[in-house]
Length: 284
Image (cartoon, rainbow, N blue to C red; front, side):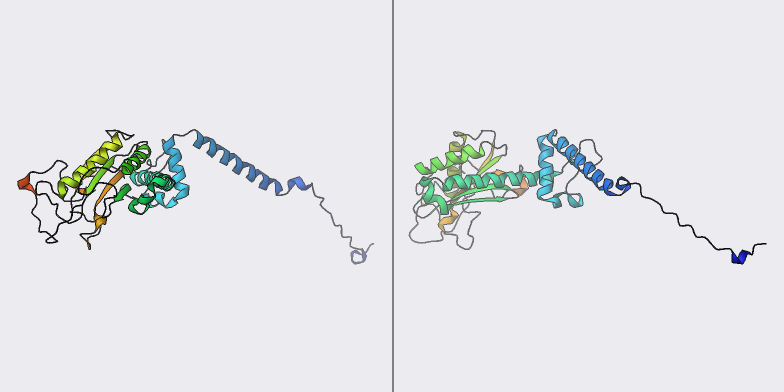
């Protein structure tokens, strides 16, 4: 009889052989890269086939993602549950286009030696209301003859350049004339007439050189009612013509008040003004 306690115990160890590297995790990384590349390709193909409005909306997102946050923007996918890009997005895109136009206009003006004398007297700004180009007068009459609406020859050339640029845009244009607080020497021809006539003269040149008649929505004269330097009512910089390439058509309530009529007011309707200087009154 064999004693079980004396029987040697045999321990058998079974080794599992590997089946090769192809069953590891490396293939998952490669597959993920392939899927990502295919997704990027499909997105590019989708964008290429979309309209200009969608392309601009996608471009605006990458430039300013905040535009689409908090309901300010919307989905650019047609037929999706989200809404189309809202007014804020449209205005943002338009402002960006106007900034490009402003830089282009500034470059052209600076590159022309004939406009060297205008450089410090031309202000080009872009705000939510649009692209504004202001021609600021000096004491000698830089853009217009002193006291009249007659344009200087170089001013005509400048307006032709402006017309060639803004005439390519679809935006509405408003032209505004302003004076300083000096009362005009002729009682029958006041600052109202002068500001309106200068704005209207600028309109004629713009329309004759590339700006469509339907593109200009308003021509307004403000006289001395909207001074650029309120603390210096007699400053020559208050005399100016402003060309606004608007982002949107402003409502009547958005206009600067009180707005002067373009047509010359009747003598009895002129707002009485107290002369600010005496006894000599200088022409503008």
